[in-house]
Image: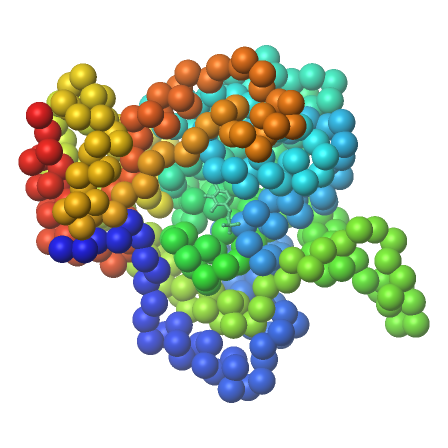
Length: 373
Ligand SMILES: *Cc1c(COP(=O)(O)O)cnc(C)c1O
């Protein structure tokens, strides 16, 4: 057996859409395909506007720029997340201020946010970790009281729901990634969604060099620092096919998770992911925690042994307060985030591709059971 940790699900439909676009001569970022993908994706999420980008990271950076995060500002992010969240803030010269994770959902602990708010705080960036949802009502309430923006990082949570609303639609701006291993994928790409017309316009403008549209003669007069964060037509065409398969791809992730949970239930030393009653978890990656004392071997050893049996895994995120690149900026000296540290030490995710078969999942679980001491 050789089971990679995650591979994309590509069918004839994707090949057909991309081929059609290319044959028609549409390859740049300006095409009906890109517009259609933006419109349909935003609609699917439950937002008015979509702005496609070259990646999830650039969507986050663009979001920071649209709300004018600048040098000296602070943005509250979880300590337990992927580096892109911190990078988007750092690219603006601002400081990512951290809160620890909730030990049950692994998402930002909402009870720790208010203590971190200062005069400099401009925004909160909740991240829906591994397809689970943050407590958005509490976060929005805090943001409202303190006059802060809320930017959701929904890169790992396509189709996840919080009280019936989709991830990305529960705040001022939602950001998605379509990287190869994400639930909906175009290879490399991202999307910013919003209901705020001015944010939409500004994001569209900044992601495309901030060309001047006042008069054709002054097109090449640039009033602000813009970017080339454009998505190509090939990506958008692939995205349109994936979007048509969204429910299938999400249900596959959930079906895999359900089977893993049934088979792993009750093994001493393994903690499984949770799905709160008001949340739909889409299990982007199926993560588990290994308690060495009870399981017999530690997370690293388990990963090594599974690799020998052909089972691909990845460790959980390395917490932001320990990241050398951020510490180098002089941040987080001596700060501790014990839940994030525990998650990094104990967490790993198992093969999670949408196309995983029942036999493959059974094999992974059999290997884990054999390795328990
Ligand atoms: C994947 C991911 C991103 C970045 O997306 P890219 O498309 O790889 O730039 C951002 N945030 C989180 C939480 C992610 O998992």
